[in-house]
Image 1 (spheres, helix red, strand yellow):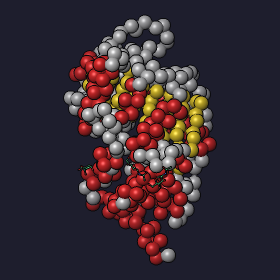
Image 2 (cartoon, helix red, strand yellow):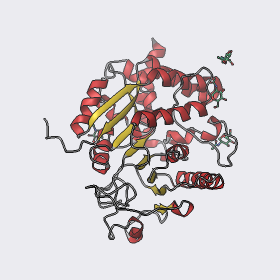
Image 3 (cartoon, protein in one colour):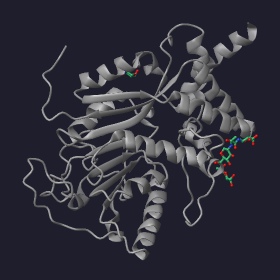
Image 4 (cartoon, protein in one colour):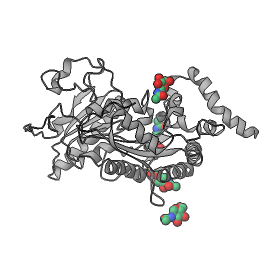
Length: 364
Ligand SMILES: *[C@@H]1O[C@H](CO)[C@@H](O)[C@H](O)[C@H]1NC(C)=O
Ligand SMILES: *[C@@H]1O[C@H](CO)[C@@H](O)[C@H](O)[C@H]1NC(C)=O
Ligand SMILES: *[C@@H]1O[C@H](CO)[C@@H](O)[C@H](O)[C@H]1NC(C)=O
Ligand SMILES: *[C@@H]1O[C@H](CO)[C@@H](O)[C@H](O)[C@H]1NC(C)=O
């Protein structure tokens, strides 16, 4: 009982100590060393650096296999137009971008808040483009890299891919917006030098065609990170909605939900370890939807239609828990926390939602 009390107090101690800990130590991804977690895939110089929780459906999968499987599962589940216009938010070192490229989308926008990840991803895409070219299958995809926060601030991030006016500035030439305000010179960068571009914008659609710089997104894809975005998943989903193609544009992501009994003690306190490990803003946890139906209703209120929420927990928690626990040391501790997540009823869900052709009448 005493031990339980001590355990239960740790999240509280953690929260009290928080203001005194230097910010760089608070980013949990600092401790997720992707080089140590992944097994390198042969044939490439750029290392495989996945960093998600993985989809574990085969015995003895490696971290790398399970991570790639989760990325592909989510893409399959999204069921969006394959050769349209894709935005990958928080792509990490860029391994998921290579998967998007396989279907040769018209445009691929890649967004991360970390300059290092933009550079890693660019190297990876460059390597892949060369290999493809040597094999006689060059991509026609136009790639755009953005080093910006996931959440778009109107008036601050003019060239943010979620800015509904993106590309309308400067006579429809997104690239010409170079003298718009930008945080870093590399923020809006054009990797198309490595890809051939075809330029036949000639559709009579009411919305710009996929290869137009103003084109809406057919897919906004967020693998295993939406729960970090401040202030809430709901606010992020609301920002994405106007950036999607009307009638077919899909938002697809994975999310982690605290157990329905979250607010009752001691579950919430024990489960409170999981939130910091995933970098979930703790303030919002008790506001998260309690059931999959509630989750669906939440996105419908935001304005989405055709919402699907699937529980993938049994393919996620114990797989990552086993893999990390077997590594011992601090990985082992993280592994046990994911074991906790499983036992205390945290859920790992996949979500896909579509922008309707017409905005639904406002409901109460
Ligand atoms: C990450 O792990 C790799 C391989 O185990 C190691 O060489 C590297 O030093 C580690 N990086 C950090 C920042 O700990
Ligand atoms: C998985 O790995 C364990 C331990 O290394 C081994 O005992 C077991 O036979 C393996 N299972 C399969 C299906 O390969
Ligand atoms: C965990 O993943 C690593 C690297 O991908 C792999 O080598 C190892 O066999 C996995 N361990 C378990 C227990 O699944
Ligand atoms: C999440 O927390 C922030 C900060 O406490 C608050 O402003 C926001 O309204 C919360 N969002 C939800 C959906 O509860």
